[in-house]
Image (cartoon, rainbow, N blue to C red; front, side, top):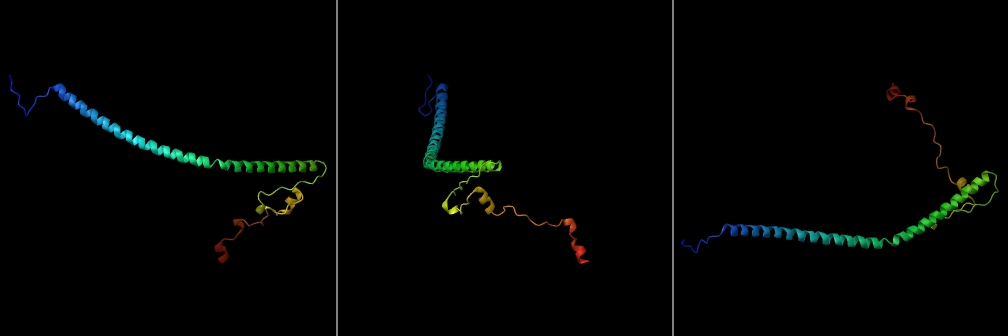
Length: 149
């Protein structure tokens, strides 16, 4: 029999390999735990951002009512303008002359004195494209050295 010393125990190779594999599994599980914690933090941050976006979206629900009202007012104004244009076409084609209803301003601060008809309103506005005087071409102008000489 071979004497076994208490200071150096003999470990069979299968046990040594088992210890190494357990060590590797421990390292892998530690790495996975850290990654899982990071993912949980990112998920919590994403949920906070989503909650903020939902709160903003709920606050914006009131806005479409005002927008819808403004769109309805715009539709009404466009219908009146189209009616005035149709009446103008009927007058030009020999139809009877009828007094056109004046358009309403969007807000009282922007209102001007209302004209009796669309024709009066067009005539009272200044020309948006005034004619400019003619300008001389560069070829017609003398050069600076010709002016000095």
